[in-house]
Image (cartoon, rainbow, N blue to C red; front, side, top):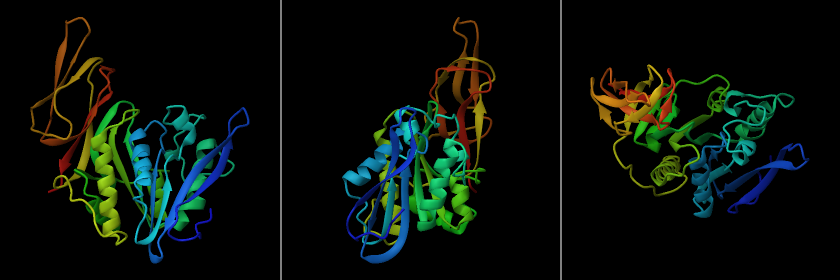
Length: 309
């Protein structure tokens, strides 16, 4: 990758990464913009999972609204990283692997590993910070939230600058982009909002606003919108799972605070012979809800978090 290009101009580089069985070349379009004034390099990317469309739309609006035009530093934009997944409405690449569980990658490894290797070797060395835009997968609707290793001061600082409604202390996952970037001394936030294969304006708007606040915090731009509400820091989160299969009706609102013993949802059988209430086991905030109405025993239904003291 060549990022030493003329300043104050948006540059596009189409990076060939693979071929379809038909021989068609698959390219990853990567954009970059550099101001004349020196500053940090910020990576903005989406489409790590091809079915997570809200992030892709955030990137599209960044480009069409020219939000990349910073006054200092450089912005690198990857609107659709997993092109294979994007064109197949899939989280994975065709080999069935998750790119975000394949870092640092191998240039001679699986397809997912090759994508990860490209990001590790060609992009990460050039950045200082990053925001990776995601959407809830498999009908999981995420209330707008940023995730980061808050024990690390720079991650904590960037997460509070982004100031989404929820800030979640999230340990690194093995073989993830975020963990690999951390090894290299780069801070990357994960923004999660909405549901896969569905565009949600509030999720998109919140992501754009948070991105602007990070840019302002890094002195790349002068102005950014104020947070929609005071962020709630989540120190610990867990999933409430279905105790049996059936039809699931969520009753609690996403993003709300529920008290211990409050009914969050109901599972029933299709024949009207069984009904079980799902109650909160402690006071918590609802971070995500599974919108799939048909569930199996053990399925994740509600992602809940406890506010940091």
